[in-house]
Structures are given as structure tokens and as C-alpha cells.
Length: 104
Image (cartoon, rainbow, N blue to C red):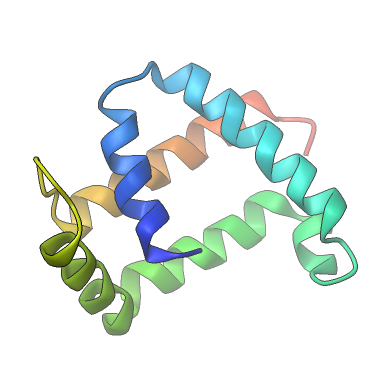
């Protein structure tokens, strides 16, 4: 996941209803898993599991925090949410999407 998406999602989630955004995220994740199944069979087989791994890597990887901080400082306008808050919002979105997509 590009670090820019973390910032974009954090900002977007402050403006739209979470369940609707989660349903859209679910649709996108499902479509991506199908399209990229040859490149990432694990993603196609276990979208929630691979999303959890990606979020864990984002949360613990210092390089991602540094990239996020640089991005926000250089590019973002208006509110500049901190990395931890942004990751929490993205993780919350994922949990809501998993609840909607219990068929996974």
C-alpha cells in the first residue's frame, strides 16, 4: 500500500459514512484479489489475513512512519493527521469491511 493512501483514507473517512466506505473498500479488495490473483495468490485466498499482515507491517515499520511524515509535511493540505491516528482509521475501516464481508 502506498503511504499516500493511508493519508487519503484517513482524510476521506472523516467526511463519509464508515459503513459505505467499508463496503466500497470490500468491493475494491475483492476485485483486486481476483485481478491480481496470479501475482498474489495469498491475497486472493485470504483478503483479511493479508490485509492484517499489511497493516501490521505499516504499524511497526519505521520507514513507513517516516515516509508518511514526509508526505504529510510536503504534500498534505489542511489537517495533518498523525501516523498512528491515520493507521488506526484505516484499520477500523478494514475491520468494518471484514464484518460486512463475512463470506471471505
